[in-house]
Image: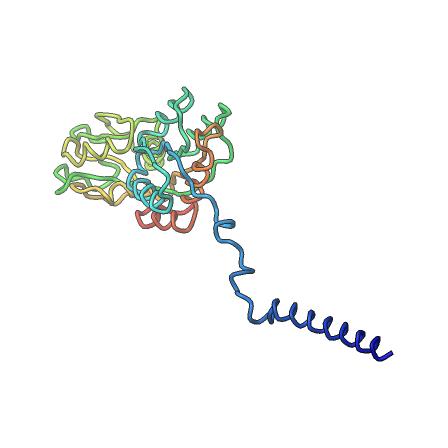
Amino acid sequence: MRRLRATALSAAALTASALLLLTGCAGPATDADPSASAADPAATEEPQLEGELTVYAAASLKAAFDELATQFEQANPGVDIQPISYDGSSTLATQIIEGAPVDVFASADEKNMQKVVDEGLASGAELFATNVLTLVVPTGNPGGVTGLAQLANADLNIVLCAAEVPCGAASATLLENAGVTASVDSYEQNVTAVLTKVAADEADAGLVYVTDAATTADVETVETDGADAVVNTYPIVALDDAPDAEIADAFVAFVLSAAGQSVLTGLGFGMP
C-alpha cells in the first residue's frame, strides 16, 4: 500500500511539473514579442506601379499636366510618363479615333471627348477643371485694344482659335453674345499658337484662356466683358484599351484627387 501511494504521488508530481514546464515555455501573454502578431508589411503593401504612360492633353493644359506628370512620377518611381502630346482637342480626338496608342485623354471640352466615347473607345469620362477666355495683347498694347468691340476693326491684326477646337468654339460664342463680328486675320489649331503670335507681336489681339495668359510673358490681358458666362469644362478618361490600364486609372485618379486639383487651381483653373 505504501508503495502504491508513493507511486501515485510521484505521478501527480510529474504531471504538475510538466504543466509548469509547458506554462513556463509559453510565457505570460504580456511578455510576447509584439512583432510576432503584427502583419508582415510586405504582405499588405500595395504593389508598386511599373510601366509607361501615354497622355494626350489639350494644349491649354500644358503647364498643369507637366507639373502633374512630375508629381505622379515622383510618387510612382516605376512609372515613366512619355512626353505628353499637347494639341487642339479636336486634333487629339481624331488621332485617338484613328488608332493612336493612348492611355489617357484630357480634352478642353466635352464635345471632342464625346467623339471618342461615340467610337466606343472610352467610357466614364469625368470632369476635372473649367476655364474661361480673356483678350490678350502684346506687351504695351501697340494696337490700343480696349475691349471685344475692337476685334471688328479691319485695321488690326486679329488671331483666334479655329472653330473646331474648344477655344475657337468658346470665342465664337463670346463674340456672338457681345454682338461683335471679328475681322480675323488667322485662325489657329490650338490656343498655344494664338498666344505665341500675340506674344511675338505678330498680332494685335487674340482670345486665349486665362490660364494661358497667366503663365505667358510678353502679353497683357484686357478686360473681357461676358467671359465668365462662357465656360469650358474639361473631361478626362482612361481609354478602354489603354496599353497599361492600371497606370492610366491611377493617373486619372491623381488628377481628380485633392493634390491634383491643387495644381490646377493654383494655375487658375476652376473646379467643375
